[in-house]
Figure 1 (cartoon, rainbow over the protein chains, first blue to last red):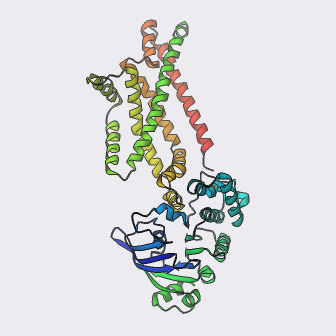
Figure 2 (tube, chains in turn green, yellow; figure 1 turned 45 degrees about the horizontal axis):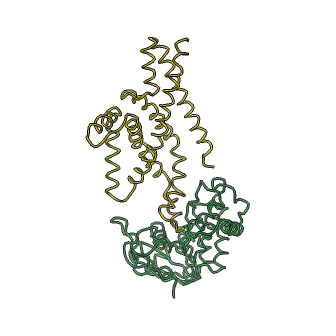
Figure 3 (tube, rainbow over the protein chains, first blue to last red; figure 1 turned 30 degrees about the vertical axis):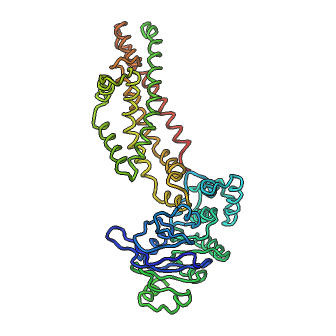
Length: 242
Length: 214
């Protein structure tokens, strides 16, 4: 039983059809990296998986919930699906600790002492326990992104979605964030990562999807996809980025 | 000086009335503004429409006309009777509400949509997102414009003297008539408004500094 099943997913913004026909199955504990040129629909695809974008057509089943069904309680599904954004989107009016504690307290109704303990453990895990009382504005980009990962993990999700998590970072910050993500992958988290970090995709990914023009053009295990891409568009993309 | 001294207790009394009206009307106006702003942002067309009509009508008519409509117009209907204090406070509140609504709407819309997305992606509801994430940030941003509108509303209360409310301006008119010293009377009245408004903007500056995003 796959944890994510996408069948014939379509997404249009007005007249502009961004996702044309996406079908993919993702197994529990799998790390799937999504690569492709900008405008290929990678981020839109990811954002359809927790319905941050309204889905135009097809079905998306997340952990046995059909999220394309209008009757589904989307908030319940989102509790199980963490998301990390390119621009972090930390809550600037709350401390680092409060950022991480907020959803467990408000959504899961965890009591505050318990939530605080969990939040500090997670901040420890991402190496930022000493920043607990700081505000997001006082952190570097890499630190913000690690807090954002801790915030998503605080809900103890079954799936983590990463939307270009290192694209807005200074080069020297990228490593710390990727290290945290790699650790998470090793612990068996199911992860879908939209990324331009080909090294990460090759090393940590179990599978790589190459998207272009609203389709998944090619998918394979990383070594195969990177070393002997079958499709001509994959070849031309990889020749430019590798 | 003798004149000012003798009139002073009356001015203080008037000032109390002015402040009483101002505080109630601005709080009520703010709550009206918050509700109307949320209606304005609601996907429901009917709520949206009501909010737009309210805002347009208030912005498109003079304060004095609104006051006369509520005090004389509504009171002339058989089924309603309001004393002048009610009518005065109501007019200031309804008037300020329309302007507050637009300030609050703009403040909410100025918050990056990534904030909503991050909050919703954690499983928080639309309401939790508004209360926990959007409004606290929006209010900080709105503070200077809220102060500005409050000051305008405070000054608008002086027009209530026209319907006979014994506010600071009304006391000025009474003292002018009894003392025949309009220069002194209106200097003192003006100074009292000035001091109150000055203190109000000091308070706002203090709040702004306290709540500045780190």
